[in-house]
Amino acid sequence: MDMMSFVNLSENYSYDADYDYSINDEICDLTEGTNFGAVLIPVMYSVAFVVGVLGNGALLGVLFQSRKSWSVTDTFILHLGVADILLLVTLPLYAVQSVQKDGWTFGAHLCKMTGTVFTINFYCGIFLLACISMDRYLSIVHATQMYSRRKPWVVHVSCLMVWFFSLLLSILDWIFLDVVLDERRHRNECVRDYSKFGNEGIRYWHVTSRLIYHIVGFLLPSLILIICYSCILWKLRCGGTQGLQKQRAFKVIISLVVVFFLCWTPYNITLVVDTSCQYYNTNICGIRITLGKAIAVTSSLGYLHCSLNPILYAFVGIKFRRQLLEILRSLGCKMKTSTKFQSVVSRRTSLWSDSADTSNSIAV
Picture 1 (cartoon, helix red, strand yellow):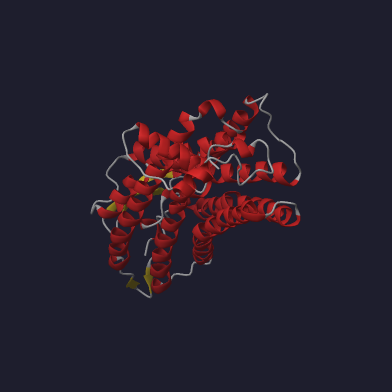
Picture 2 (tube, rainbow, N blue to C red):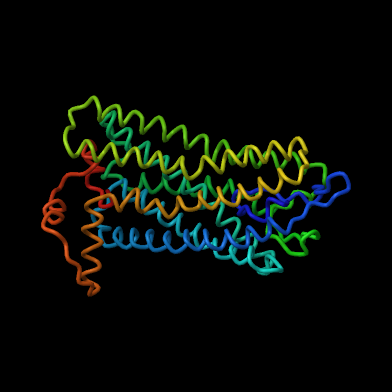
Protein backbone atom coordinates (compact mmCIF):
# COMPACT_ATOMS: atom_id res chain seq x y z
CA MET A 1 0.00 0.00 0.00
CA ASP A 2 1.20 3.51 -0.76
CA MET A 3 1.95 5.00 2.61
CA MET A 4 1.59 8.48 1.20
CA SER A 5 -2.14 8.02 0.95
CA PHE A 6 -2.11 8.57 4.68
CA VAL A 7 0.80 10.63 5.78
CA ASN A 8 0.47 14.36 5.63
CA LEU A 9 2.98 16.34 3.68
CA SER A 10 5.08 17.61 6.42
CA GLU A 11 6.04 14.24 7.33
CA ASN A 12 6.88 14.15 4.38
CA TYR A 13 7.88 12.25 2.73
CA SER A 14 8.14 10.94 -0.38
CA TYR A 15 6.07 9.46 -3.04
CA ASP A 16 8.15 6.94 -4.94
CA ALA A 17 6.60 6.83 -8.39
CA ASP A 18 8.70 3.81 -9.32
CA TYR A 19 8.02 1.77 -6.19
CA ASP A 20 6.92 -1.73 -7.16
CA TYR A 21 3.95 -2.94 -5.16
CA SER A 22 3.79 -6.38 -6.77
CA ILE A 23 4.97 -9.50 -4.98
CA ASN A 24 5.76 -12.54 -7.04
CA ASP A 25 3.60 -11.20 -9.86
CA GLU A 26 0.79 -10.50 -7.37
CA ILE A 27 -0.55 -6.98 -7.09
CA CYS A 28 -1.07 -5.58 -3.60
CA ASP A 29 -4.70 -4.67 -2.97
CA LEU A 30 -4.76 -0.98 -2.00
CA THR A 31 -8.51 -0.84 -1.36
CA GLU A 32 -8.27 -1.71 2.33
CA GLY A 33 -5.74 1.00 3.07
CA THR A 34 -7.56 3.64 1.04
CA ASN A 35 -10.85 2.94 2.83
CA PHE A 36 -9.10 3.00 6.20
CA GLY A 37 -7.60 6.42 5.50
CA ALA A 38 -10.88 7.78 4.16
CA VAL A 39 -12.52 7.02 7.51
CA LEU A 40 -9.76 7.80 10.01
CA ILE A 41 -8.13 10.92 8.58
CA PRO A 42 -11.24 13.14 8.29
CA VAL A 43 -12.27 12.30 11.87
CA MET A 44 -8.84 12.84 13.45
CA TYR A 45 -8.03 15.94 11.43
CA SER A 46 -11.43 17.46 12.16
CA VAL A 47 -10.99 16.96 15.91
CA ALA A 48 -7.49 18.45 15.81
CA PHE A 49 -8.70 21.38 13.70
CA VAL A 50 -11.73 22.32 15.80
CA VAL A 51 -10.11 21.86 19.21
CA GLY A 52 -6.83 23.41 18.13
CA VAL A 53 -8.26 26.50 16.44
CA LEU A 54 -10.63 27.21 19.33
CA GLY A 55 -7.97 26.64 21.97
CA ASN A 56 -5.24 28.62 20.25
CA GLY A 57 -7.75 31.31 19.30
CA ALA A 58 -8.69 31.73 22.96
CA LEU A 59 -5.02 31.85 23.85
CA LEU A 60 -4.28 34.59 21.31
CA GLY A 61 -7.33 36.53 22.48
CA VAL A 62 -6.10 36.53 26.07
CA LEU A 63 -2.60 37.51 25.01
CA PHE A 64 -3.93 40.36 22.86
CA GLN A 65 -5.98 41.74 25.73
CA SER A 66 -2.91 41.69 28.00
CA ARG A 67 -0.41 42.82 25.36
CA LYS A 68 0.85 45.74 27.49
CA SER A 69 2.15 43.40 30.18
CA TRP A 70 3.68 40.64 28.04
CA SER A 71 6.60 38.69 29.40
CA VAL A 72 9.23 36.76 27.45
CA THR A 73 7.24 33.56 27.83
CA ASP A 74 4.11 35.25 26.49
CA THR A 75 5.98 36.34 23.35
CA PHE A 76 7.11 32.78 22.66
CA ILE A 77 3.62 31.46 23.34
CA LEU A 78 2.16 34.07 20.96
CA HIS A 79 4.33 32.80 18.10
CA LEU A 80 3.60 29.21 19.11
CA GLY A 81 -0.14 29.84 18.93
CA VAL A 82 0.16 31.44 15.50
CA ALA A 83 2.28 28.54 14.22
CA ASP A 84 -0.17 25.96 15.54
CA ILE A 85 -3.17 27.69 13.96
CA LEU A 86 -1.45 28.04 10.57
CA LEU A 87 -0.55 24.36 10.69
CA LEU A 88 -4.06 23.30 11.67
CA VAL A 89 -5.80 25.27 8.91
CA THR A 90 -4.04 23.10 6.32
CA LEU A 91 -5.53 19.87 7.70
CA PRO A 92 -9.00 20.24 6.11
CA LEU A 93 -7.44 20.12 2.63
CA TYR A 94 -5.75 16.82 3.41
CA ALA A 95 -8.93 15.50 4.96
CA VAL A 96 -10.76 16.29 1.72
CA GLN A 97 -7.99 14.60 -0.28
CA SER A 98 -8.43 11.39 1.70
CA VAL A 99 -12.21 11.35 1.15
CA GLN A 100 -12.49 12.38 -2.48
CA LYS A 101 -12.35 9.63 -5.05
CA ASP A 102 -10.17 11.79 -7.30
CA GLY A 103 -7.79 12.66 -4.44
CA TRP A 104 -6.16 16.10 -4.55
CA THR A 105 -8.24 18.42 -6.73
CA PHE A 106 -6.89 21.81 -5.62
CA GLY A 107 -4.10 22.14 -8.17
CA ALA A 108 -0.30 21.99 -8.06
CA HIS A 109 0.25 25.58 -6.84
CA LEU A 110 -2.00 25.14 -3.80
CA CYS A 111 -0.32 21.79 -3.18
CA LYS A 112 3.09 23.47 -2.94
CA MET A 113 1.79 26.40 -0.88
CA THR A 114 -0.16 24.27 1.58
CA GLY A 115 2.63 21.75 2.04
CA THR A 116 5.23 24.46 2.54
CA VAL A 117 3.06 26.34 5.06
CA PHE A 118 2.47 23.09 6.93
CA THR A 119 6.19 22.28 7.12
CA ILE A 120 7.20 25.80 8.21
CA ASN A 121 4.73 25.82 11.08
CA PHE A 122 5.42 22.22 12.01
CA TYR A 123 9.11 22.95 12.61
CA CYS A 124 8.40 26.40 14.05
CA GLY A 125 6.09 24.95 16.71
CA ILE A 126 8.62 22.37 17.85
CA PHE A 127 11.51 24.87 17.89
CA LEU A 128 9.46 27.35 19.94
CA LEU A 129 8.78 24.64 22.52
CA ALA A 130 12.53 24.15 22.78
CA CYS A 131 13.07 27.91 23.15
CA ILE A 132 10.52 28.08 25.97
CA SER A 133 12.17 25.18 27.78
CA MET A 134 15.62 26.80 27.46
CA ASP A 135 14.33 30.15 28.74
CA ARG A 136 12.72 28.49 31.76
CA TYR A 137 15.84 26.42 32.39
CA LEU A 138 18.07 29.48 32.53
CA SER A 139 15.56 31.42 34.64
CA ILE A 140 14.87 28.72 37.20
CA VAL A 141 18.09 26.71 37.40
CA HIS A 142 20.66 29.47 36.88
CA ALA A 143 18.56 32.51 37.83
CA THR A 144 19.73 34.07 34.58
CA GLN A 145 17.54 36.11 32.28
CA MET A 146 18.44 35.34 28.66
CA TYR A 147 16.12 38.16 27.61
CA SER A 148 15.69 41.57 29.22
CA ARG A 149 12.55 43.68 29.41
CA ARG A 150 14.67 46.65 28.53
CA LYS A 151 15.41 45.02 25.18
CA PRO A 152 12.15 43.34 24.13
CA TRP A 153 13.33 43.29 20.52
CA VAL A 154 15.81 40.52 21.37
CA VAL A 155 13.09 37.92 21.97
CA HIS A 156 11.31 39.00 18.79
CA VAL A 157 14.54 38.56 16.84
CA SER A 158 14.88 35.07 18.32
CA CYS A 159 11.37 34.21 17.17
CA LEU A 160 12.07 35.59 13.69
CA MET A 161 15.18 33.41 13.52
CA VAL A 162 13.04 30.38 14.35
CA TRP A 163 10.65 31.27 11.54
CA PHE A 164 13.54 31.82 9.12
CA PHE A 165 15.18 28.48 9.97
CA SER A 166 11.83 26.74 9.57
CA LEU A 167 11.48 28.43 6.17
CA LEU A 168 14.85 27.01 5.11
CA LEU A 169 13.73 23.51 6.11
CA SER A 170 10.68 23.86 3.87
CA ILE A 171 12.74 24.33 0.70
CA LEU A 172 12.52 20.61 -0.11
CA ASP A 173 8.74 20.87 -0.04
CA TRP A 174 8.70 23.79 -2.45
CA ILE A 175 11.02 21.90 -4.82
CA PHE A 176 9.54 18.40 -4.76
CA LEU A 177 5.88 18.82 -3.85
CA ASP A 178 3.62 18.17 -6.79
CA VAL A 179 0.35 16.59 -7.77
CA VAL A 180 1.12 13.03 -8.85
CA LEU A 181 -1.28 10.62 -10.48
CA ASP A 182 -1.36 7.30 -8.63
CA GLU A 183 -2.18 5.00 -11.52
CA ARG A 184 -2.82 2.08 -9.20
CA ARG A 185 -5.64 3.85 -7.37
CA HIS A 186 -6.61 6.21 -10.20
CA ARG A 187 -6.37 9.35 -8.07
CA ASN A 188 -4.12 12.36 -7.65
CA GLU A 189 -1.94 12.80 -4.58
CA CYS A 190 -0.25 15.95 -3.31
CA VAL A 191 3.09 14.42 -2.35
CA ARG A 192 6.83 14.80 -2.66
CA ASP A 193 7.77 13.41 -6.06
CA TYR A 194 11.49 12.66 -5.91
CA SER A 195 11.46 11.16 -9.40
CA LYS A 196 10.84 14.50 -11.11
CA PHE A 197 14.60 15.09 -11.52
CA GLY A 198 15.46 11.53 -12.46
CA ASN A 199 15.15 8.13 -10.82
CA GLU A 200 18.79 8.03 -9.74
CA GLY A 201 18.29 10.43 -6.81
CA ILE A 202 15.02 9.04 -5.46
CA ARG A 203 16.55 7.01 -2.65
CA TYR A 204 19.09 9.70 -1.75
CA TRP A 205 16.53 12.50 -1.42
CA HIS A 206 14.06 10.23 0.32
CA VAL A 207 16.53 9.13 3.01
CA THR A 208 17.94 12.66 3.35
CA SER A 209 14.52 14.18 4.00
CA ARG A 210 13.74 11.51 6.55
CA LEU A 211 17.04 12.08 8.38
CA ILE A 212 16.46 15.84 8.48
CA TYR A 213 13.06 15.30 10.05
CA HIS A 214 14.22 12.71 12.59
CA ILE A 215 17.27 14.68 13.72
CA VAL A 216 16.13 18.30 13.44
CA GLY A 217 12.40 17.81 13.93
CA PHE A 218 12.40 15.32 16.79
CA LEU A 219 15.71 14.14 18.28
CA LEU A 220 17.27 17.58 18.82
CA PRO A 221 14.14 19.23 20.31
CA SER A 222 13.54 16.11 22.42
CA LEU A 223 17.08 16.26 23.80
CA ILE A 224 16.64 19.93 24.70
CA LEU A 225 13.30 19.29 26.42
CA ILE A 226 14.63 16.33 28.41
CA ILE A 227 17.75 18.13 29.61
CA CYS A 228 16.05 21.42 30.45
CA TYR A 229 13.03 20.02 32.25
CA SER A 230 15.06 17.36 34.07
CA CYS A 231 17.28 20.10 35.46
CA ILE A 232 14.23 22.19 36.38
CA LEU A 233 12.64 19.27 38.22
CA TRP A 234 15.87 18.61 40.08
CA LYS A 235 16.14 22.28 41.03
CA LEU A 236 12.58 22.36 42.35
CA ARG A 237 13.11 19.15 44.24
CA CYS A 238 16.34 20.25 45.90
CA GLY A 239 15.42 23.91 46.29
CA GLY A 240 13.40 25.68 48.87
CA THR A 241 10.06 25.66 47.03
CA GLN A 242 7.50 23.81 49.13
CA GLY A 243 3.84 23.01 49.32
CA LEU A 244 1.19 23.47 46.68
CA GLN A 245 3.33 25.64 44.43
CA LYS A 246 6.00 22.93 44.20
CA GLN A 247 3.45 20.22 43.47
CA ARG A 248 1.86 22.26 40.69
CA ALA A 249 5.24 22.97 39.11
CA PHE A 250 6.05 19.26 39.10
CA LYS A 251 2.72 18.39 37.47
CA VAL A 252 3.02 21.03 34.76
CA ILE A 253 6.59 20.16 33.83
CA ILE A 254 5.93 16.43 33.76
CA SER A 255 2.80 16.93 31.66
CA LEU A 256 4.71 19.04 29.14
CA VAL A 257 7.34 16.40 28.54
CA VAL A 258 5.06 13.36 28.75
CA VAL A 259 2.44 14.71 26.33
CA PHE A 260 5.09 15.77 23.82
CA PHE A 261 6.61 12.30 23.72
CA LEU A 262 3.26 10.51 23.81
CA CYS A 263 2.17 12.46 20.74
CA TRP A 264 5.31 12.27 18.63
CA THR A 265 7.29 9.16 19.66
CA PRO A 266 4.88 6.59 18.11
CA TYR A 267 4.98 8.41 14.79
CA ASN A 268 8.77 8.67 14.74
CA ILE A 269 9.21 4.99 15.57
CA THR A 270 6.78 4.05 12.79
CA LEU A 271 8.55 6.33 10.35
CA VAL A 272 11.95 4.80 11.17
CA VAL A 273 10.55 1.34 10.47
CA ASP A 274 9.01 2.56 7.21
CA THR A 275 12.28 4.19 6.14
CA SER A 276 14.16 0.95 6.80
CA CYS A 277 11.65 -1.08 4.80
CA GLN A 278 11.88 1.26 1.83
CA TYR A 279 15.67 1.54 2.00
CA TYR A 280 16.10 -2.23 2.02
CA ASN A 281 13.23 -2.61 -0.47
CA THR A 282 11.14 -4.79 1.83
CA ASN A 283 8.32 -5.26 -0.62
CA ILE A 284 5.77 -7.32 1.31
CA CYS A 285 2.13 -6.39 0.97
CA GLY A 286 1.20 -7.14 4.56
CA ILE A 287 4.03 -5.02 5.94
CA ARG A 288 3.31 -2.10 3.61
CA ILE A 289 -0.39 -2.07 4.44
CA THR A 290 0.25 -2.30 8.19
CA LEU A 291 2.83 0.50 8.06
CA GLY A 292 0.45 2.67 6.07
CA LYS A 293 -2.25 2.30 8.70
CA ALA A 294 0.25 2.88 11.50
CA ILE A 295 1.50 6.09 9.89
CA ALA A 296 -2.07 7.31 9.46
CA VAL A 297 -2.85 6.76 13.15
CA THR A 298 0.42 8.01 14.64
CA SER A 299 0.71 11.11 12.42
CA SER A 300 -2.84 12.10 13.39
CA LEU A 301 -1.87 11.69 17.04
CA GLY A 302 1.11 13.97 16.46
CA TYR A 303 -1.07 16.69 14.97
CA LEU A 304 -3.26 16.60 18.06
CA HIS A 305 -0.27 17.96 19.95
CA CYS A 306 -1.00 21.35 18.35
CA SER A 307 -4.44 21.19 19.96
CA LEU A 308 -2.97 20.34 23.35
CA ASN A 309 -0.45 23.19 23.42
CA PRO A 310 -3.00 25.77 24.67
CA ILE A 311 -3.98 23.41 27.47
CA LEU A 312 -0.42 22.65 28.47
CA TYR A 313 0.93 26.18 28.28
CA ALA A 314 -2.08 28.23 29.17
CA PHE A 315 -5.20 26.54 30.46
CA VAL A 316 -3.30 25.09 33.42
CA GLY A 317 -2.44 28.65 34.39
CA ILE A 318 -4.58 30.43 36.95
CA LYS A 319 -4.01 33.85 35.41
CA PHE A 320 -5.04 32.64 31.98
CA ARG A 321 -8.32 31.24 33.25
CA ARG A 322 -9.03 34.52 35.04
CA GLN A 323 -8.39 36.55 31.90
CA LEU A 324 -10.46 34.18 29.76
CA LEU A 325 -13.40 34.45 32.16
CA GLU A 326 -13.15 38.24 32.03
CA ILE A 327 -13.26 38.16 28.22
CA LEU A 328 -16.29 35.88 28.26
CA ARG A 329 -18.05 38.15 30.73
CA SER A 330 -17.31 41.18 28.56
CA LEU A 331 -18.97 39.32 25.69
CA GLY A 332 -22.10 38.84 27.75
CA CYS A 333 -21.52 35.33 29.04
CA LYS A 334 -22.76 34.88 32.60
CA MET A 335 -20.47 32.46 34.35
CA LYS A 336 -20.43 31.48 38.00
CA THR A 337 -17.16 30.95 39.78
CA SER A 338 -16.75 29.38 43.15
CA THR A 339 -15.40 31.26 46.13
CA LYS A 340 -12.44 28.90 46.16
CA PHE A 341 -11.53 29.75 42.59
CA GLN A 342 -11.85 33.48 43.20
CA SER A 343 -9.51 33.26 46.16
CA VAL A 344 -7.00 31.29 44.13
CA VAL A 345 -6.94 33.60 41.11
CA SER A 346 -6.41 36.60 43.33
CA ARG A 347 -2.94 35.32 44.19
CA ARG A 348 0.01 36.76 42.32
CA THR A 349 2.08 33.59 42.49
CA SER A 350 2.94 31.51 39.45
CA LEU A 351 4.01 27.99 38.73
CA TRP A 352 7.27 29.51 37.60
CA SER A 353 7.86 31.94 40.46
CA ASP A 354 11.53 31.01 40.46
CA SER A 355 11.75 33.29 37.45
CA ALA A 356 10.86 36.90 38.03
CA ASP A 357 10.03 37.37 34.38
CA THR A 358 8.13 34.17 33.79
CA SER A 359 6.04 34.66 36.90
CA ASN A 360 4.49 37.70 35.23
CA SER A 361 3.38 35.66 32.24
CA ILE A 362 -0.34 35.86 31.66
CA ALA A 363 -0.30 32.41 30.10
CA VAL A 364 1.07 30.53 33.09
